Length: 378
Image (cartoon, rainbow, N blue to C red; front, side, top):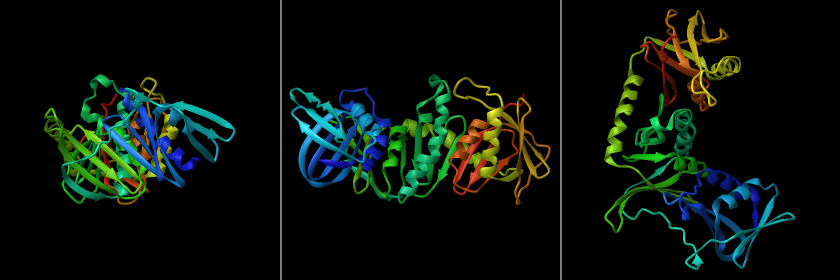
């Protein structure tokens, strides 16, 4: 069977980061050809993803191979087309003049079965806009990137989760991000990063299902399904009442900060602020180790400019736009890494800084708000 590599490769590159080797079945990938459709299926036993590709001819086969090996190979090829064929107990991939054979995986003498995740007892069904999924992926994930620079032993499960309700998505680590949107029906769920990264597979709105299924041993699993025409993504999620109640603390605290009546409201160009921070970080001193845990800089106001000064005395001036109310005497120290992350995910032309309580600064644009803590002055 002949496949267009570009489409196949795009899917492989998205799924590859979600592959893990914690279980024998979690490290494998299934290829199923039936009639004029090829399905590529991957699971880590917590999520299951299936992507369908149209074939130019009718085919019929099933193969299971090592996911990492297969996806790494597909992602690295540089031809226009590839050919997949089955040879005894191996999948042969022909790419131009190159040939590769991947051994098929067997279990108890039979080709391994990959368990499909589905929701039998649905309590919520609705459509979710792909714009919302991509916003969660692009915006909320930036907050969770901060976790990579922190001691993992000091992070709790909630600081690795996306809290999604009918009002938006909330993530937090050292600061927080509240991405406001409206879903058709009430929902409260915690999604992990592997599942959210797979949102990149979607290009259209999805049919969403949520529900609870009981195992034979009495354990009840919470499950979600995101489904489009050729893409099926399902997951078993950790969504117990204990965690849902615990996240209300930082969630409500963030909302209180966002709703505070700040004395200072300062509007600047997103591109101007981002460029200034990029330049000053290239000359300033990183106070962290290796992965830039902290890059402190002092923010002050001088007439019509926001002045950013690092600890070596390097500074940048960013023009303040109209509709600004700001106290020239106010001084605050912020982590430039935190601001750079939120600006990199910002599609707006302008952003508003709300501050004045000597605790946190709220960065607002359209329906998205980021809370960045003020640091103790040196």
